[in-house]
Length: 287
Ligand code: HMG
Ligand code: MG
Image 1 (cartoon, rainbow, N blue to C red):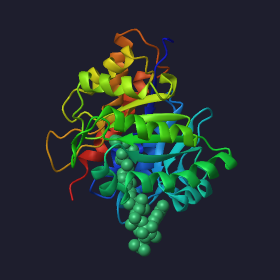
Image 2 (cartoon, protein in one colour):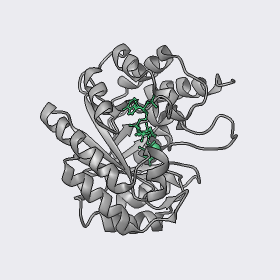
Image 3 (cartoon, rainbow, N blue to C red):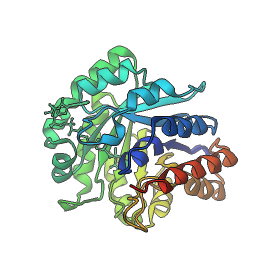
Image 4 (cartoon, rainbow, N blue to C red):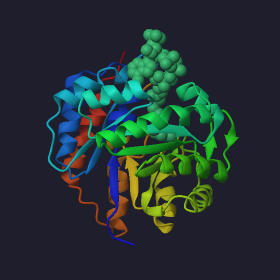
């Protein structure tokens, strides 16, 4: 196994999408521009979903148009259907992502489709991306626990992960959406998924709601996973729920990985600047 571990920065998308106050496009662009110099290979900056469902992401095309694109960085966007894919392509996203769930309850609540229906919707997106030469990433949410259905069986995660992989996703990001996973449940889930998708094509996407995300990353490293999603400043918690936590903070993951002796290619000074910007953006969320 290599000593390099990649952090996939998702703060401008997964972090910001949860902020209730509308954040100005220029502030989002400034955050992405700061992150662009930190050494990331991939940054998720946009989401072409219904603006009624996620108002915060309504300016995704403007964000992609406004950022300074750094060489060697791929700027990614979520695309739940063909309409989203076409918008992402028009906005010159460098890669797209389709996002499903291992649990029926969350699938219905998040994208208004059963798991089977969602896979039917994703297939043409994956096909169109392949024709356009755009890499497609696949997300599976609720890989250990679902807010609607409770505990999720590892076999259910493996089924959806395999379907997305076979559809052409180059990487499957495994989401502990509500941050209830433990090193044990994450390990059991990874054991099942690694049977059907090569571990080199897996990523961990752990929310830090219970403060266990870093432990879960360590359990995943033991299993050979070498890509982790994180959000600078720990963006993603609810500004109206003090103490609530969002995505695991990039700088926290980075510090732990460096402590364990892994290379990340990231510049801690720039990460800290970006974290300050991110925290300020949340701090200004007063209304
Ligand atoms: P639907 O209601 O089933 O679909 O929504 P629809 O085709 O009937 O469309 C409903 C409305 O959305 C229509 O507008 C469409 O035009 C519009 P209306 O007629 O009501 O004015 N619409 C769109 N608008 C813009 N872009 C589009 C688009 N598609 C339809 N691409 C849909 C289905 C998927 C659209 C909806 O459920 C949706 O937008 N869901 C978004 C959910 C979301 O973004 N969740 C957060 C991201 S996932 C996540 O955070 C988890 C992750 O981080 C991993 C983890 O942590 O587990 C990835
Ligand atoms: Mg997430």
